[in-house]
Image (cartoon, rainbow, N blue to C red):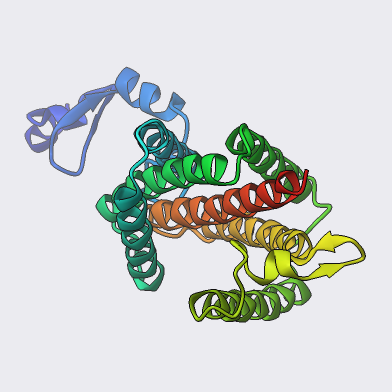
Length: 270
């Protein structure tokens, strides 16, 4: 006969076990828990591919939705306000250690309206109908190719690529600032400034500069994918899903604008 101390406690009954909080659970319930799949990154509050995909997709869909009124009901004041607002939000998010979900969502909405307005403006002002759709398809194809190249292991974000992106990005920024300065101070009367005033081997400088910018954008995408990959493997907190999504969306916006400008310059010559 067992001691009354044990026999009076149902935790010691055959087929019974006990939780840390003192409650008991049957052997069948315990077996059911053992049969469940192990906790994934999402369950543990960690960064995950699923989380990044969901948040990136959400931001892109929101940008599409807000682009529609910007494109269909063009307003120049709205174009300028959304351009400035998007730039400010982008800078704030870029320099924050963690990405605030509300700000990321707001950025997607404002940037979407800006891209819709910009697309309508360029198509109308430069008489290039359909340029927005072409730029959109080019951006989507570029994203798909870069993702395939990275996932297949054919391209990696090596230190050499990082250095090229940094030097190329600074050089592109300096050119853009000089070009804008010349346009503002009347040094050129072209709508695109040096991009169309200068030709190299029969091609406008803007096309060559645009192609260089697209290459930089592709490297930036590879870097974004590398950040996601390393973040998931290193078990970063789930809040970094938003940072990764924001970075990918920023790169896609850059690529879209470059494709839109290249198409407008090329079609404008015909």
